[in-house]
Image (cartoon, rainbow, N blue to C red; front, side):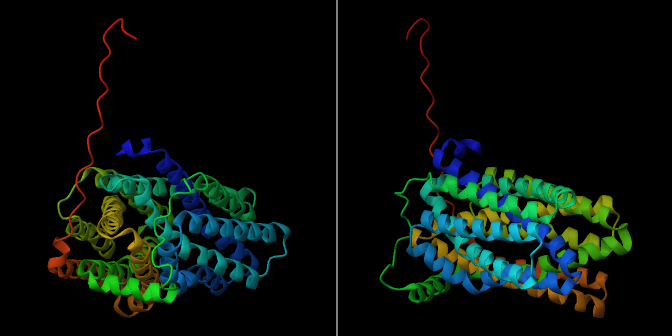
Length: 417
């Protein structure tokens, strides 16, 4: 798996990707405590969180079109610079005490828009750095790196907020965007993949991208599966899991153990996905989603923590395999000029589904009961996955040919130079 680290430009990409992911995990934690300290209002906190996500919903498709129309390296550099400035400004107003809620909302709207443009371009740039047979290994390394960075970031955020205040944590986020931009700037200027359709215009590019996704059955089926599972399974578990832990399992320590198990599973999933060369990667990824069923079932009972944690490991395992195989399939199967737009469609479905699912989970659990709802979630996970596997196109996605073997150095006879 780590053979891809021999590629210099991929190493640079990985450093920028990891630094950005570390910062992304710092800011939500820090902003949560900053807003609660400022207002004490959960409603105000929800408004700030929404301000970071709403632009992704509004601009995801446009971001995909930009990533397919302009050099992706340039798009990523610009968005990193913008987000660095935004989070630096956020840190300054928090540290100086002149913070206002409307100002936090405005700044996070800009930061969210940056993510809508950065992520599709980043997915589209990777095939320009790594040959297609090694894309799965590259995506596995990126997944593991992001997961490890998130673990460290959450711990660092807690320490920074407790010892120095949330402003310093957001300031570190600004520095990570600066690091990402500095590393990306060292990538070759010749990375111009994605400069197709310059004459068509952005809106026409969005329409063309949607049409291309619609014409590829496997792609829109995968987008539908990802959206449904986020709406009906993943988002409700994120809400109901902490509630079950608080009511029946002893509170925050129990849910922390479950979260750690999930993260460990995600790291293991990165290793598994790098080694597992499935002949039907889409079917394998969709089928692996069933590994989340034990987590929903053990929470529904609820089972003891020592049983829920292994179930969480399986849940984390599936999410890494699912994401790695999905990213690799998009990069393998699609022409360079379409990767960013296809990524934006998949991203949009997930971003819309999660807040809707989290918003509905509480009222539905109040009406039906937490246990029955979690049991129903497990059943829905099975039904949606089986229905997806019944679509023939799910089985037609094939991986790229294997990467060529690394050359073996010729032995040098003793005494020769």
